[in-house]
Length: 448
Image (tube, rainbow, N blue to C red; front, side, top):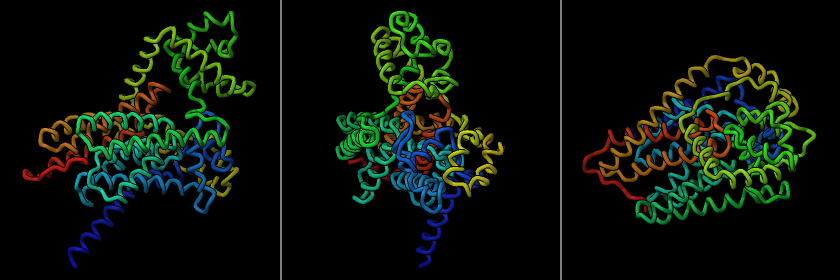
């Protein structure tokens, strides 16, 4: 009875510790963290519609905000899902509640997991999709219930944003290669391929129902065209074609000598031209992008690879904690008028100082994980810990995939890589503890 009580109390203490580590920043803030996009997602939760540059699936995920509990309900769900995935990671490393607690304190207390778990944005699900995919690929011992849970969580996370799906597809392809090399089992590889296929059909199907168009990302061509702004590819092309065909982009040529964000989001930019239907922009963007790639395939590829490289090494809070009253106030006032005073008194709106050291600590933990994960993975492989080494290797592949999907195909921003780096911090912690506690005679299981 004493042992059972100790296990139960230890488990409870671990759950509470992880919950506190993941939730304390948003609780200290006094209101869910919000971003520029959050207002559109909240509006979409009530209307079922979002602008083409937002992810409709996440707006639907926020639908429970209409229930008692309001904006805190999705935050509780996000925190709970992160904790659940960390628990499954601890189990994969053959650890009990002490390892679970260590992972929660590392990912939630030292890295970016707590920032994004408390943010009304789909960003936290990028890491959930990655960790879920890695656990699916390396899973050889879990029960059927645990596998179904992993599949459901991974599918949900990938469904909520197209970039999450892109990384998942990349991991699925890597999984097929590893299966052919006999490094992982067939079940894990084919399961992840199946998840990617289902989600890859689900997102366009949702867009077909909501907007009458079967597409993965309704604003994708515009974002891709914007990647050609900074290196001057779009400006050079327009110099040649505008005299013959006056594209709408020709009127924005004064914006083509800086970053793509001014072209997209600046005053009078593509997404803020009320008199210009975005459907027309989408068609022209596809035409211009195709012409640029055909004319300069090497330069276009270089833009993508350079952006991915910059993104891989760019991570931090960025403008995640910036006051958002101007962007968010109208949505809160319209749908949650009783919460308006709480929103305006939140730490984020009062420019509180905690994010300064949260950002510094998160950057330090991120750099440490980028150094430790490859080193510890090699060490684990040399010690016969094949599954542990695979988890480390797949984590690095996923980080590179996220950098490619965001920095390579969209734009470079600190928060894009920070949203997934907590996975590397958790994996580095698990690898370090696993290696330190490994018994010489302990056999390693292989994914089946």
